[in-house]
Image 1 (cartoon, rainbow, N blue to C red):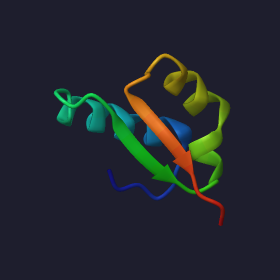
Image 2 (cartoon, rainbow, N blue to C red):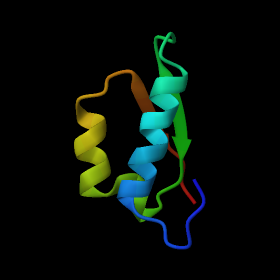
Image 3 (cartoon, rainbow, N blue to C red):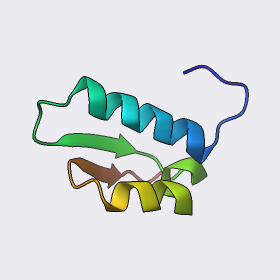
Image 4 (spheres, one colour):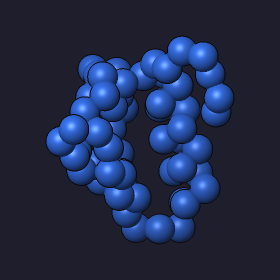
Length: 60
């Protein structure tokens, strides 16, 4: 997942990989900071329909 530039699209690719890897789990809990790619519109849109992914935002 290495990249010189981080983006919501790259982060969503990581989320998809996590979801596929842990497909048998009921919930995937993500502890995230408030970095823009974690809270961006594209990421939030993707997460909206994925109740399996539970996000907890940590203050920085």
